[in-house]
Image (spheres, rainbow, N blue to C red):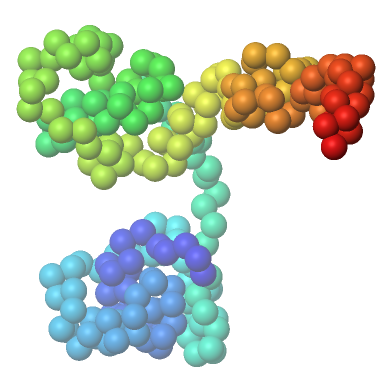
Length: 234
């Protein structure tokens, strides 16, 4: 069975004293170790615990015990309750034990620093604080701001990791998506243009200009005249 009875050790004490069930059957039903049940039978364990009758509490029936007493390999079956209690829904702020209330400012500071996306109502719901205290810590006007140390509220026992993850996931849904494409290439019309801006991309642009732009205009008449003069001198 996956569910243990109420007051498992007290139930085991009663079963040891009032039934002929084996230690293994009692241990399996009460979710105890067989040696622990043997210690109960020997008086070495749970000596000060009064036995709890599982029949009067509706966890076992006499027929169920009788069937298991006849067959030592048959496990006891926990009786299902005929009354279903409605789930109690918590309303309002989370209750914080007195011994841990002094740790709430540290937890609030941790949430403000590490999860800025959380709303005030979410932080108040997680650690059971008031809006006045929360605003004082946000604005650094809390009377003990200088001595506060950011501490994870889960490690302080103010909330569970599941509760924290749930609130963070809710806050993330309301955050706008920020698209960061990183560094991109310059447009083609800028990188292929032969102007001053090309120097910012490739350096000097003289080596990239067509060869005909660098050639000087040649005067053919002056060239032939120089050749004639050269031959005459010979």
